[in-house]
Image (cartoon, rainbow, N blue to C red; front, side, top):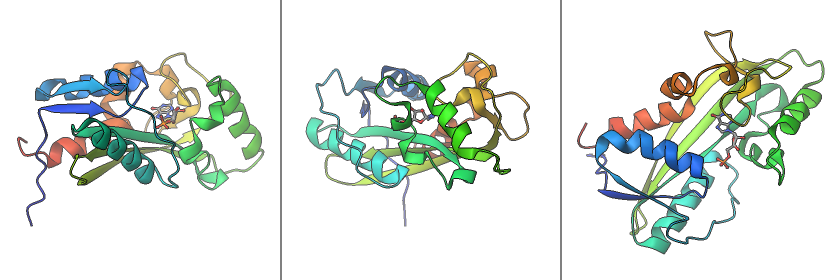
Length: 200
Ligand code: IMP
């Protein structure tokens, strides 16, 4: 079976998060793919009703591909804290509340962990590519590590200041963006996508 991936010359990024569009544009830069943001096309943001990263990534990419008639790429990501049974997981963004207050979300993680000894955690990223004809592919990236409190570092976003990746002593918040971007969960999912592509 030939499952090589034929990347289109133009892709809609199924996200209204300007930061994500910039990051994906940057990752696709070397591959001569024109990137269009969902906001620029006036696409509606679907409700994330899935129960897995993969389901939510697919739902966003499929909605954007169908509405625009152009192949779409989406990203769904989050932090799974193993002492909390994988929470916040797909609810990572929602734990930040309407104000996207991730210091409050990190305090909630710390409070819910209490004195549980298991501090292990993993970041996940699922990239979904969907075509207007209904076909799709997904690619998952994961990075394992542990949590440390209080939060440290001012780089990055979300839960970066409490996550220490395996093999390091610094939190993602203490790493320069360029360093983190080279090996994090999004980079790993991206490497799988590029690895599957025809021109590779
Ligand atoms: P999404 O936009 O629904 O995929 O939400 C992803 C959420 O997971 C973000 O709002 C962050 O809180 C968290 N998250 C995902 N990736 C990262 C990361 O690289 N660092 C820190 N937090 C992340």
